[in-house]
Amino acid sequence: SAEEEEMRKALEERRGVEDGESGCLFPGGRGGKILERLVERRVAFREARSGRVQALSTLLDDLA
Image 1 (cartoon, rainbow, N blue to C red):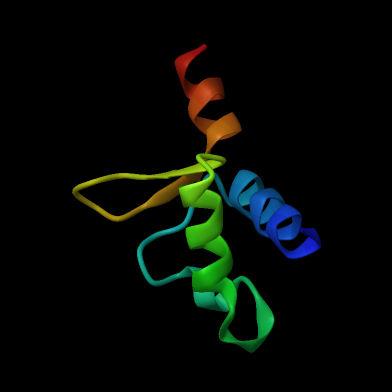
Image 2 (image 1 turned 90 degrees about the vertical axis):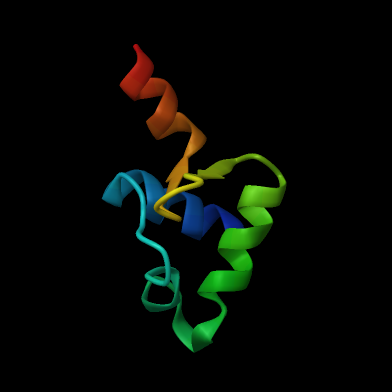
């Protein structure tokens, strides 16, 4: 969706978001739900310990 694409771009620009920070990235308090959809689709990944979420493309850049 357009919302998911906007959130993915925000993740890439910021190099990820901390747990609970997604709400401020998207108006109307829907940021958390949009971010969870990206995590479910494996477009973004949540770090188990910190809860930080990064876009897949950012993770791949870090590995290269």
